[in-house]
Image (cartoon, rainbow, N blue to C red; front, side, top):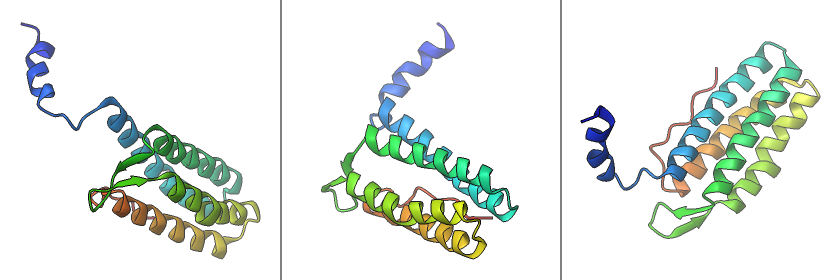
Length: 137
């Protein structure tokens, strides 16, 4: 029997691993790495690269929410993540984008901290507090 076929029964026992949730997990991990990279690039004064990475982070987060916009939340009730995404976009993410555009060191660092905290809050509301948002450099 081929090794992959031996794994098939075990994989069937893991109902929470759907293609959609695996893709969301992958995108959110990528978003975390992009958040760290944005912060590092900003600290190095590489403003244009930080702006580009911030846009890439946005794409990862928005695609994640769009692919699974409603999910069971912390109390078991279904949570619509789209309003949380809209608040993230219009709040700390756009603040960071503007600060990076203006090459404003203090403002961009504050926006990065605020953005990270809003990510943590969203994960808690979405019933995913175990998902760790990386520390900023």
